[in-house]
Length: 81
Image (cartoon, rainbow, N blue to C red; front, side):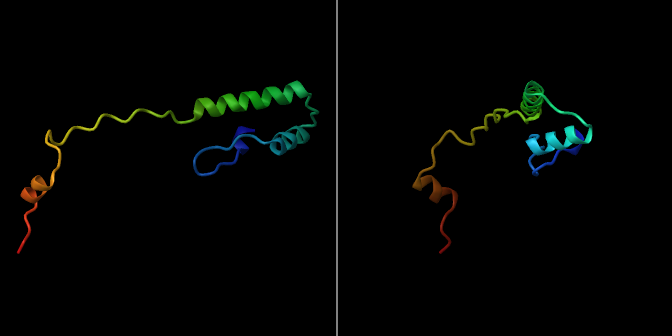
């Protein structure tokens, strides 16, 4: 079923009831409730494992110890008159 899974540009979509039902129909299977539940649980776990992990952003280096003030801005960027 995974090879026929659709995607949305951000990754694979979860398996839907229609896809599971069609897969079972093509193979001549009648799924029991626990089998459907197992397929959905495995698919959910697969999506959790394959999802990209949020990694903390590295701390940005401090550019200056001095806070920007109007006087400092004028000193850095003098007006051209």
